[in-house]
Amino acid sequence: MPGITREEVAHLARLSRLELKDEELDHFAGQLDVIIGAVARVADVATEDVPPTSHPLPLTNVMRSDEVHPSLTPQEALSGAPAQEQQRFKVPQILGEE
Amino acid sequence: MTVTELVSYEDALATYDPVMGLEVHVELGTKTKMFCGCSTALGAEPNSQTCPTCLGLPGALPVMNAIGVESAIKIGLALHCEIAEWCRFARKNYFYPDMPKNFQTSQYDEPIAFNGYLDVQLEDGEIFRVDIERAHMEEDTGKSTHVGGATGRIHGASHSLLDYNRAGIPLIEIVTKPIVGAGERAPEVAKAYVAELRELIKALGVSEARMEMGQMRCDVNLSLRLNGVEKFGTRSETKNVNSLRSVERAARYEIQRHAAVLGSGGTIIQETRHFHEEDGSTTAGRIKEEAEDYRYFPEPDLVPVAPARDWVEELRAGLPELPRLRRKRLREEWGISEHEMQSVLNAGVIDLITATIEAGADAASARKWWMGELARRANEESIDPTALPITPTQVARVAELVADGGLNDKLARQVIEGVLAGEGDPDTVVDKRGLKIVSDEGALGTAVDEAIAANAAIADKIRGGKVAAAGALVGAVMKATRGQADAARVRELILERLGAAE
Image (tube, rainbow over all chains, first blue to last red):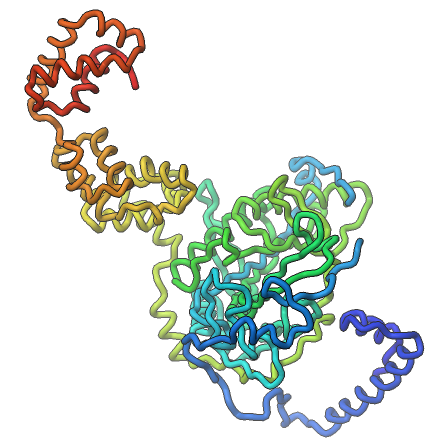
């Protein structure tokens, strides 16, 4: 069994930009353990003759020709943005003072 | 920011052996983005070239751009790579607002091209083989503008603004294997590699690869190991170096910096670094994330790419002559040295000279005009020689006029000047400016001599440097010849005879 540690959860939280409290780290460590354990059972079922599958459809090479299609207007593109400025998506400070 | 005392380049190389890895991103010149039909045209207003797919809106599905895939295969083939029979895209997950999806669609362990090489020629003609690890397909990110801080930098900014027009434009990332054995020439090899790769990309016609416009950019990975040691040292990755000169400077700087850190008993931190054009230095960026931190997984929304072998062979058969071999052939045809060819390459006029020769000029004069007058003009105006308002056909015509004896070099320069000034094609300029060599130079010379003799005082002033006084003598000659002489030529003859210069 994987045995997810709270350090690993903290690392994942950092990568995902999530702020987790100490008790949440423990809580999620346990939950993630269960999830990974459940998924791992697939390995018990799969045998040598079952290739790893990432796509359920037997398709390859689905391509389109290099032709321009109309884009959204800037107003439409920005319509769902919580904040905008100068016709651009406005996002909070990316890096804190270092 | 800590200031690093650098070790001299020679001292660094006396102790350490540099190992490099170069990652070059090339923005393809497709009309549309990699996974949607949004235009890639430059200069559009912010966020006017986006759609649900490149904005990562729920339910939108990406579809591969056929030309994007084809371009990737062409690049792979030109780099002598194997082309994958079957490969997938992967999601590279990271949280940064330059990608609205929170992941970049890239390729991970199944690149479309792998195991190749590119032979590059160094300044002295030596050929250095750079092994290619892989070339894979991915997409560009949006453009961030950082607001509220000093000089637009991300540090100290209060917030940032995002334009996603660039997000999703196809990129090919070309990664070398570790470049070992270059020793003190490592920075030169890095520059020569990027230069040759740029020529190759342009020859393939898959991108204009203009570094100053960000269409091609290089990340320089560099580490040092003690001479004689097999194991590589810890590397730094200098990001987004976007000129050939900067590639060389960045490698050189990092060699000196690493040597300083290691020499004083310190350790190199595996991190990304920013290059500064002003002084050629680098400064620390973020601590490099491990590959596993990106939590790559196969992109479920895109089906695998399985390029048919006959398609690959068709593309291979259609590859153009490789730039280095073409330069070698042209160099022999033109009868010039390696060094001269290098100058022609650096001036960016190979294709222009070739076209001028095709239009009828001989190699020597085609090269003379493009490398002399025209390269100088392009340089003065800081434009690409191809942007000069004169065509190879026009230059060939000027060369022809000189060869026929209708013009001398001096007059030919004036013709070129006229063409550049928009006065028309060479023959029109010749007519308008009256630039034919005066056939009866003898008669003209006599008239000039007589005018000088008759106006000794003015002639003395001109001898003394008062060139403006020449007008009076020109007038005298024009009068004597009843206006049929070429005034400009008369003026030249007067100044020539009196040893004065303009």
